[in-house]
Amino acid sequence: MSFFDFEKQPIRSFFCTAFLVVVPEFFWKLFEHAILNWIDDKIAEKLKIVSPSAQLVVDFLIKWGVPIIILVLVTIIAFILGKRSVKPSHTTPSCHPPQSSDRPMFEARTEGKISARNSQLPSHLPFTLARAETGGQINMDGVTFVVGKNEQGSSDPVRNAMMESLHQKQRVALGLEVNPKALQIEIGESGPFMATGRGNIPLYSIKRTFSIKIENVDKRRPIAGCKIYVMSIDPQEYVGPWLLKDSFDLAAGEHIFVPLVTYGEARDISKTPAGDTFMTIHALQATPKPSSGTKHLVTLRATSRDTAPCELQCSLWVNDVGRLKIEKVRIP
Image (cartoon, rainbow, N blue to C red; front, top):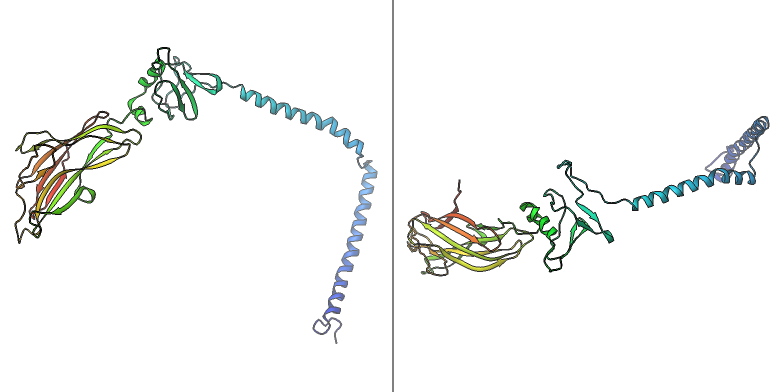
């Protein structure tokens, strides 16, 4: 039987192996530390090096540590005070190089508010300007601009000069006025543009109605006093214009559908020619009824109190299979 028989005597074999491995390593490390300590002592004795005392450590900290801490504190305090004393300066965007005639545009006021000094406010300033009526405050990217009122109660003339100097596109983008092209007309043949109903002969005909979409594309300002007209129908069978819808408002981004024309179609023109001989325009008064056998050019116009008028031309006709069709005319 072997002395290191792990299968039959595992405990004895384990301890014997550990003794043979650990004990030599222990004595070797003990010897190594003794040699190193002896060498350290000889070097310290030769160089006359001694361990620092507590008094020596305290003297070193007083001599070098305290001045460094004081210098750091003084630097931090000076930085904070200097930052608070900095006044806002006039900066010019890179797209508009400074001119020798430029003056500071704003001057600081109490409570961090800024008032305008220059009556000319460049149109290229990249900020968001909140709308102010008579007096109050204007906010430009978190900075408050004071807009006062004079003794008579009217708006500050400086504010009027600032608003007038802004380019129209910038005023629209900032929400100060409505986009003059915000009122738009759109046509189509499917979805909400089209509706069908029972015809004059329900088994053989249907009524198809096309509507036009009137939309306010301005995302910030409403439009008031809108009207929709059919200005003309060519070839001319009737004398316009005809009012389709009168006096309605559109909120920002809102749209409505206004019925334009209805035509009674035959369900199957090859079996029963039951289609109408005319189309019906949905005018409020004096409804025109252009012939279904001719292709018509219709001019539409939308107006409002706040925007420029919008016009659109479209073609109306009945195709070979008796279906009402509409198409926008591209104006060159």
